[in-house]
Structures are given as C-alpha cells and as structure tokens.
Length: 92
Image (cartoon, rainbow, N blue to C red):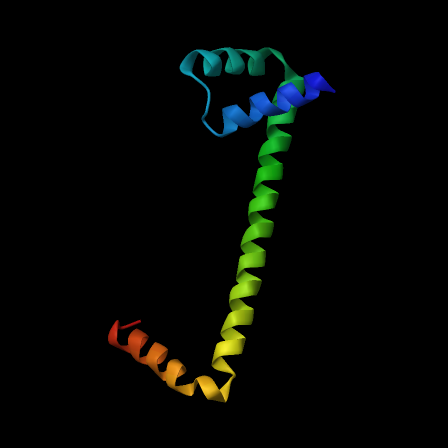
C-alpha cells in the first residue's frame, strides 16, 4: 500500500511540474524501463482529465441555473436591461 501511495505521489509531482530537474530526469528514466509506471502515469493523466471535465460540467450547470433565475424573474427586469445594455455597448 505504501509503495502504491508513493508512486501516486511521485506521479502527481511529475505531472504537476513539481520535481527538480534531477528528480524529473530519474523519473523519466524509470518511465523508459518500467511499463507499469508508464501505465500508472497514463491512468493518472486520464483521471485528472475526467475530474476537470466533471468540474467544468458542474460549473456550467451552476451558471445556467443562475442565468435562468436572473433572466426569468420579472422583478429583475431592470438588472436584465443593464446587462443587455452592457453587452450592446461592447459590441458583443
């Protein structure tokens, strides 16, 4: 279990660019000779990408909810017009 955690932490440091040049050189040498480590790096990259996509999806959903709340409420008509004018002035 400890080895697995250590490998995960090393991979994380590598992917985040937190290794010193010497550490990076040694890690990349290990990548050349250790197919299991290469597979683990690929898996961690994939996990980061999936987390990023999930996060973007959640933010988009939250923004759409806010947009619906603001632009469907008649009491916020003045604010809606201010926003429309702002974008009209900017040429957007």
